[in-house]
Length: 264
Image (spheres, rainbow, N blue to C red):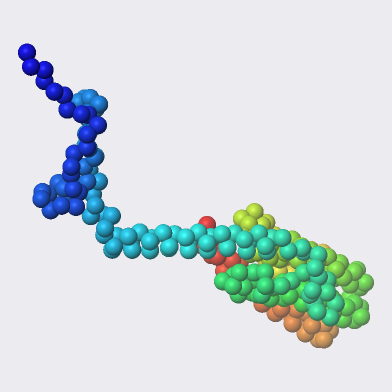
């Protein structure tokens, strides 16, 4: 009986993947069958067209490049936030002639938020000016026989109101703009609403505390005209200042709220 010769399982087929003889060898590369078992034998087809397509490679490279640029911008933004957060607040630089607070909107606040920060800064300067003018007007009333108690109250309003307004709502807003902190934004909204309520109360000046003459509101101005015209004029100007501060504060509150909602 003649013995049948088995083929060598490790012998490779002479297949030219770059020949144009058939459709399978022209565009696909076929790995040789090593004959380790018919059950697990498989043919792996590697498309050569995708490897040789320059347009596809260019699209992939462009996609990778845009993704890298996006990641670089994100990393730079985070580094800027960390850098702004690391700036010490004890570097006092404002006002320039007598520095008492740290304030540098140009270098610490993002460009797109600087206008809002300047508006809030104007609002804070407005309440400071209102309280100082209120002290001056009440001093005139005291000199005209209004009593020393209203002078002491107006002095307390000015001494406590100026720094507290900075600490309670302006500095939290400054830090919120610089670090994009939702918690500091919430702190600002809470105390800024109280600030607006105080401005409305001062513009009315109801006769609750010493007949309302410790604040230059409209009711105190009407009562001031009955005693002395000069006192009434001073109080009427104070009433206009508190009304203006209230309107500006409401506008600032709306702008910052819309900015905060847009950041979420």
